[in-house]
Length: 405
Ligand SMILES: Nc1ncnc2c1ncn2[C@@H]1O[C@H](COP(=O)(O)OP(=O)(O)OP(=O)(O)O)[C@@H](O)[C@H]1O
Ligand SMILES: [Mg+2]
Image 1 (cartoon, rainbow, N blue to C red):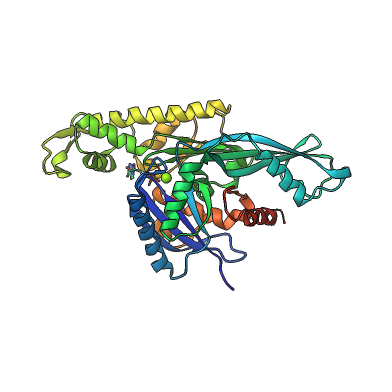
Image 2: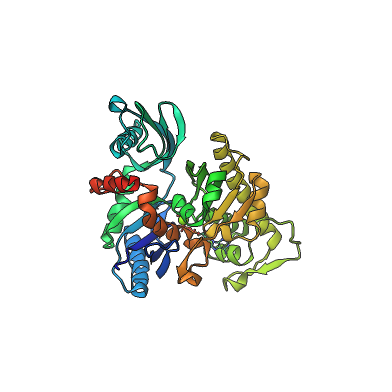
């Protein structure tokens, strides 16, 4: 039996990660057969700023994974991220002829009408995710096919992005010889890797703390309720430490990774770090407590921004399954407690669920988004992303149709 190979490439602000896997028919667990990563990505906050560096990083991360997997790369899903991303919940409406049974075509028409939001010039749709259907006023319907009615409505979550940024990313990735199957919003991909069905039903927010951005996706009743990209990431913590200690960014990064903590409360002034350990030209001895104070200040700002975003959609403190933290920034010791305190929600680190194969190589929150991209690809027929500017939009529509079969 030919197995469908699926590839996730997370083009983050700090690194590119590739994960390759397949899922045998009847199996629920994806099998990982290749992993590759490359530090540096030529992106800042999700936007390509150095084409050459991006092409090199993607090529390197892809080749490493390809060598390991020993199969050609196909069905390639790429992360999309950045401050330019916006989201909204919309409603689509169509009438059904003569009280007939609702068919796949009606559902597609309804979804189509949900995406005819007034898009400003230079913006395009990345996802239209149906949340629920409403038939003749009766809401909460997950699959209306086969029901009868005269009025079919759909509530959908629509994610849009800036066309120039997306086109630029697309072109750059294609320059690396990659044939893109689809783009997926980075934190949405990460959610696919770490969330259980139960958490999505109860209400949960996934927080993907990257280098340049923090992505969040709120789920409720099993579906996406809200998504947002906050332009602050763990790289800002590094920059704050560099300023606070008057030291180089590379030194600040190492100090953060080796000695950083989300809160200063357990540290005394006697805990010190000799910076010459990281940089021979340094003669400072820095206080760990002071560094933790710098980190804490930035984290509080970040969590407050997330809280504000939750408040905007009426879910502040209202998500029973709490917050699930992923991304490299989630590796900071004490961050779970900090999230609990400042979000007023239960919190935990998210770990990819149900994986087989080379799992030990993926034991790091920095890989979560790439794993999720691969899983999204495997599930695509279920989760139904659409990429409106896909040159082969017919193929996307046919995938949507498959979903309803
Ligand atoms: N052990 C650690 N402790 C604290 N922070 C860490 C640790 N390891 C990595 N980080 C931070 O995680 C960030 C990178 O995370 P990640 O790889 O998820 O980002 P990215 O996907 O490249 O960026 P973005 O999502 O913003 O595009 C860096 O800022 C790095 O300093
Ligand atoms: Mg990321």
